[in-house]
Image (tube, rainbow, N blue to C red; front, side, top):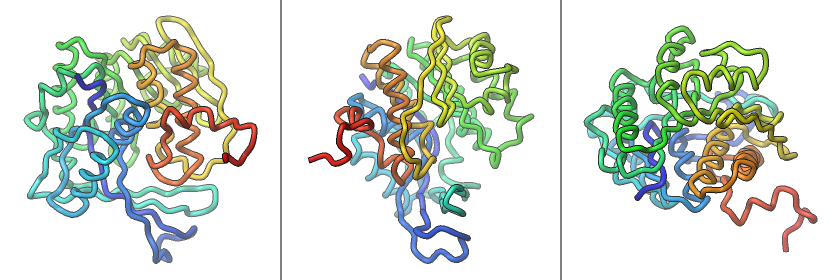
Length: 314
């Protein structure tokens, strides 16, 4: 049995090595990135089995994605190679010391062509958790139908359905996103959202009110991610607040994915609510404290390193 299955688009990621306008960059690092594959890697590093379903191009970037995910222990049997479309690209640079700019080149990409027929239904039905995001819902009509088909299979099999709103303004406008996201939220058991994302769907004066309003749509567990302010969890009517870990932020991209991975991994372990929320916050802190979308995601042996007695580990 697979602990977690997720589906979506992952892309080749070019990161400029100098701060400033992208036009002046000459050196780039090459990696991969994608919200769903980030979660799969995070869950795997914390000791659970995860699989990723998606389409990649028949190109070097597609091979980079396959080898990277497989190398991290993610099950890639659901990966499809598309001979007629390229792997999408993501370009990241630091415009200033405080601002990271991310641009996507994914129109017509292999990942955007995901469709229900691509799903390995036996893989979906074997999972304890299906994790989806609003990004895949926004990619294309066929990708949206693939998500709906996966959710229907997972629910029929008795799996937990987890969703991260992950709103991307570049993919669809708020008024279009709201109705689709509301429909998806109603079919989920676990929901992750920032305060801004929550307000796309419901009204609320504060994080707790937003969590209650979202819970009213269906989810048993609602996690409101507040970045440097910590997080709020509403589970089965009980509210918990989490304080942030004091780290120096180097790269904020991927923090929400890390948070979701930490929470889901601990839930799969069967640990209590306090520990799962603490691990989620710790994973998010690891993500922002180093460069890369997923490279700094923690293993279990790392979780106690955020507050060391000595800054040098010997």
